[in-house]
Length: 601
Image (cartoon, rainbow, N blue to C red; front, side):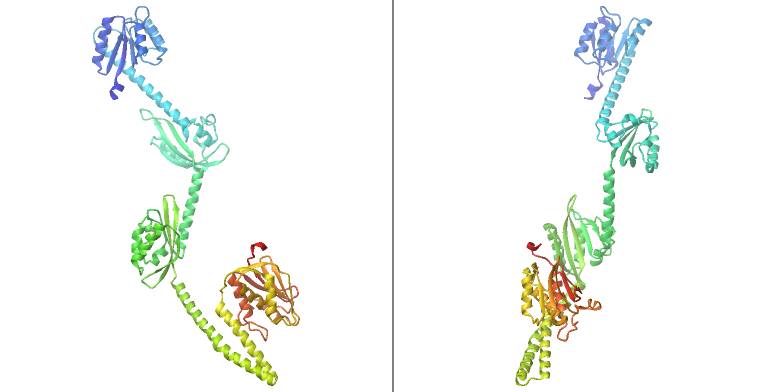
């Protein structure tokens, strides 16, 4: 392929056949890459030029029928830039002038001797090289022009004085200017004040032809909008190294810069959050190298290496090192591998350590651009576990106490109550009546204590409960004396029926016990719950904060546990109970945060 490129095909036309052959022979001897074809008339020369491709045409001037300039004129119709050398024995100034006017590439007069062929060969070689260089330059310029016009990037062209000479269509879209509007202006038209120093540095570098330069600058569109553009600048030099122009490729990266800024802020926030969390955190990427790790995790596993130095570390190695502190060292590593293979979230796994502490482990698979990553969180639950065990022991003791109260106290109490009743049948006295009331109060106290001890904050299965029906049932099961009930509630609530009944009974009983003779008890609906109020003496403002505490009562017959049970039942359901004053000046208890059945709301 290189031999074909280097070959020079020459067409030599001369009516003197002997001289034509001689010329061809000497030219091919002068340069082994020359391939010379001959013709002895203009007609034959035109025919050969039409059917073959030549790099240069050499022609005599004075030929029969048509001379060399006629040949040139005819040839130029199809090959306007093909090198053409007039090699003639006619050496007059007139011929030379006509040849130059006609546009010959070179003019050479025939002489005696063979040295003239050396000169002709050099003239041919120079003409061909110039022609090929010109064609290569034109092709390069055409490719550059196509690139500039079709480039997805903006392309800005400067001359050596940094004056704009060209802008492609994409550049016009980005900057809002047309090429005509910017031609002759400097870069200052396009650059925001804050970026002047940066652009000055770019132009200084380019002015001394130090090659390319990359920058991100704040630019100003024609409409005044400020945008961020990424620039790739490159100088163009001539053969002597002199700067003849600058090409700048650019694109609008405003949105990219904004996203990168947000990402940097987010990463900084996440890094700060991870560092300050009271739990140990480890994030690893899909190939199990550390993305983020905090000091708390290293404290939990007794690792002395700084967290910053572990970024990019192998998490499998870290897991093996951490397992040395686990009671089940082998199981610790195997469980991590199992969780990663399953890629399912796992929460609240317990990990026992050889130092006596207990950790709580949580695992979450996380989607990352390069695949599935892994997030681990470890929390020291040693103290919590100890508190839970202590609470469990307390509950067990409380349950034992409840059993003692239920069995060992209630039986003697029943015996005492029965004997008092028999004694009162035989002889009525104030002392026996007082004793009977005291025994009844003790029985109520035992019931309330058992409720607090056994049921506590627990609720059973929740169901839809008709509030109106339940209020009526409660009213019929308690001693109401001459009190009056007013209610028109129709709502259906979602609750543990037995415990809700307990709550309402205690509130109604509280109104009867404290409201006075003939008290009116009202049960009504609220937007997110219900209320129980009366027209009695109410609750003093300074007692409303303590009224739900166990043992608080102003009634001689009350146990002081009724309202504590009310609060316990409400909170067990996730409700809120509060006390205020009714419109009639009595007590008003509001239970809010209640869930109604779907049909009611």
